[in-house]
Image 1: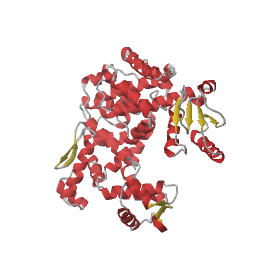
Image 2 (image 1 turned 60 degrees about the vertical axis):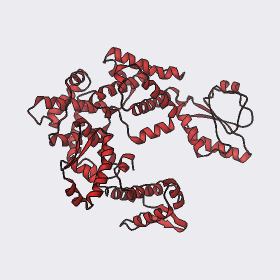
Image 3 (image 1 turned 90 degrees about the horizontal axis):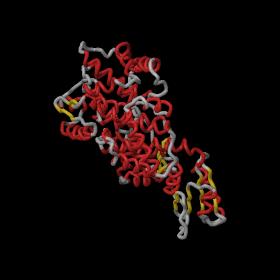
Image 4 (image 1 turned 120 degrees about the vertical axis):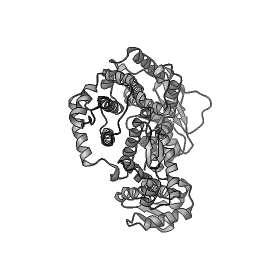
Length: 487
């Protein structure tokens, strides 16, 4: 279950039981309660009680063996049980009802959810902290989310898009799906966006927008942002036709409302582009020349600072097009700079070196339009992912990793097999044990990465070098895999 959904479950026991089930389901072997206890930092006694409660559910999910060993044999049941547990959280029901325009006071919610008002207050205080991340507040009588309409819409999209993983109760219905298919097809036929817009994310945006319009909750976009966005040649004309002819967004005689809603749809497409070289390079040349020039210079700084081969202009345009879009979207709300928690955590963990350079470049850049980035971590993560994409295209199969391992005969054979499985087929691998590695060897055979399981004090190598344990462990292999991916 993703981080956001877990945050919506303030009950510690339910939260823990979900993590317990996931630990068992993800294990590639029969796992012990001791292992789970160590991972979750929870006592064995508590986990045994959790297992018993899960066992008492109607669905027989966990299979118990001797010595507290556990496994799950029916993986299809996992999602069903996780959804059942998650939906015990009052915050799922409250959020969905607020979205539907059903606003109850504290006493009414307590009665409906069969919980005390004190427990409800505790859950709602937890919800307030979540909403703060979206620049929103929670009104308690009645219980309703307050804030700028753009931020409210963003929150609901984030909520439904995230909870799609766990329950069908939060997915678009058939009516919305059909409307979306018709809308999406219209955009594809009347613009040059074919193949360049994320499909499912836009589906959830259509669901959120149509519901907010049904509730007469309209977007407000400042005059200066309206003017700037309407100047963009890419999609506005198509969006204008779409809004009038298909989505039926003109729900009011107020022309200002209609214009704002059309522009908001255009912003949504801006937030859901799939970036390719051809598409990006075709767009950035249409924009403010001075800004585009500054963005290109900033992107090139990353490659020069790291003494890397500079990508061609089409590849660089991916970075520039993304940054240009972030600047435009930030006029509407800085929330559009955000990523999902799991993406940020994974990229920082696995590609921290690239991330840190981009973060430093963004932090110290002098481009006025980038001075007020609220979520700089998230933007840096995106630039890191584009860097990995572009580097892989440049270097492709040119990566050469040299393993210089020391050990007894059979163990060396074992490490050879293990290394071959780690680096994959797209990387040239040399396994060297019968001679000393020198810098001359590194240069002659164009080695990109040297991995060795011994200390070398007498020579500096002109390549990325990693010294692992004498008997490489899981952390060592993860690091090797990261180096191969990053190089």
